[in-house]
Length: 143
Image (tube, rainbow, N blue to C red; front, top):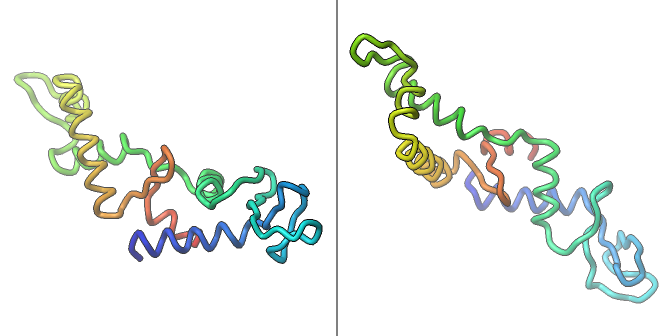
């Protein structure tokens, strides 16, 4: 499933889990039109969270509750260990490859980690929502 399909499914999920809400009359309007004022300019109500226009906030709330955020540090460290081995020998010192690289050049480490994150997002293995990132596989489990 590509990113557009995942986004569409998440929007569908957001609409399934919310109820249209008239903020003027402060009432739920399950039929999509307010029975009191006749408005169809309705917000969405998510139980236990609140009301707002749009679906992004609903999706973020669902993901926050049901999907564990991806640990980019852990994913990047695992990739480094897979590529270069778990330990490295520098002269007579044996150290964790991750610790050695991160200690020698922390700036290069952060740059490489961010580039790796961008490549995972581009390959749609990681999906960004708001300020958080999730494994696409984990999101697919709730759809």
